[in-house]
Image 1 (cartoon, one colour):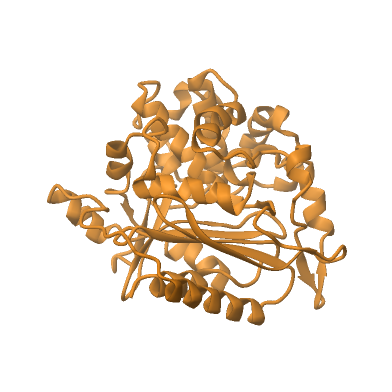
Image 2 (cartoon, rainbow, N blue to C red; image 1 turned 30 degrees about the horizontal axis):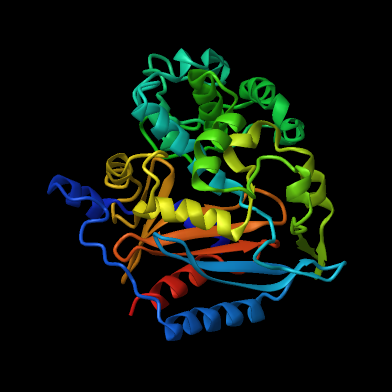
Length: 386
């Protein structure tokens, strides 16, 4: 399996020990310790980061260490724009791709907590167009909101002819999803198998926006971005974002090429709720701090957040990992990590994972698709706790 996709698929994951902990009235954060970050620890992370950039020196990257309180340390390497020789910096805006799914999942949890929806609600209650998906299983139970969020709806990863529906602006997003849905199909019977589905999250986003009575982008801005203080985060290329946006690159014939990533700036079409967010290291750190119980309670209560991290869906019989509502979990020989990776958008790659046992995390935001992925994340999270 390709290294880039290995964690996206196989480390969605662990839940074995978390499920057992929940049976004993514990949560994923029971007995978690707070890490004291010494200068020697931060020097170690800087050394790991510099070495990783030396191995993958194309374009740029901004990395950060995150605690429940704040972004504790950050460093940038390389260029946000190679042609213009603009260095990457703390203020640089990147696209975070499929980490966007975490915000859609948080919207679901908020609406459940506020009594607007139930996890067990059939999707067709809010989005009857789901019945246009091809290959429906006869006599299968209706797909639920929870199944969409957990990638167990059986809907395929992506639609046929996806490029046709990837250029619409945010204002036309719902129309794009409705038009795209007939080009999706089932890859498995609903509720029987994990099938990672970008299309499923597009449907989830529309269903939730209809339940909320508000456009998806406006809801997320008002109920997540603003209360978390994410002032440099957006679903579209507004002037404030464009001014500090890193140019995305694909390495082609040994040379960085930005043409395709620039084309994708026109809008993500039906994928708004799946991979459209632009943000900075400081803003994404605020979201990660929230995930590590840093608040505020107005976004989601600690009880609901802890409960969400305490159950999930097993993927493999060896318990290598699992997926929950809006998060991936990976278990390795010496640590467990939680969070999400961010691919899907040409020319960008992001990683945002933390240790539930130690309440410390690492973020990397990259404007090229190589390097700074799973091995880097693991090295840093090991280096932060010693």
